[in-house]
Image 1 (cartoon, rainbow, N blue to C red):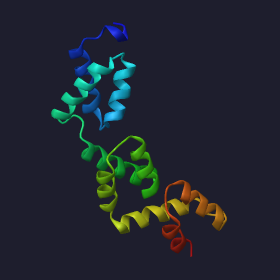
Image 2: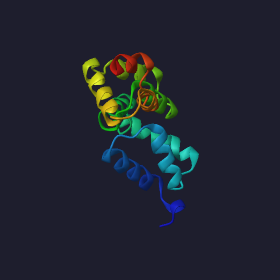
Image 3: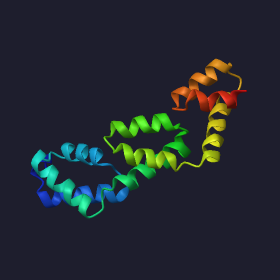
Image 4: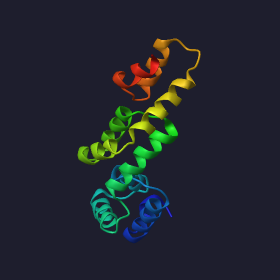
Length: 144
C-alpha cells in the first residue's frame, strides 16, 4: 500500500507497534505518522488515543532518555536538558528527572568521559566535556 492509503486503524496500529518497541515522545510519533502520510487532523486523534492507552507517556520517556544518554552516551545534564527541550517535553518533568540522577554515578560518568581524552591537554579535555553537556563547575574539580 502507498503511504496515503492507510486507514486510521492501520495507522493507529502501526503507531502502537512503533511505541511498544521502544519509548518514543509525542514529537517522534508525530514525525513517524507524517512519514506514513497521516493527515494532521487524524494525527491528533491517533496521538490522543496513544496517550490514553499509555503508549506515549512523557514521564516514562524522559526517565528512559535521561538514563540512556547519561549511561550509554556519557552526556551531561545540560545536553540532556537541551535535547529534551528540543523534543518539546515539559520542563517540570525534565527537571525532576535530572534531579533524580545519582550524584556519585554522575561524577563517575564524568570521570569516564575525562579518561577518554587521556593524553590531551587540560583545555581539550574541558572543551570535550563541555560538548558532552557537563558544566564548568562540574568539570573543573575533576581536572585538578
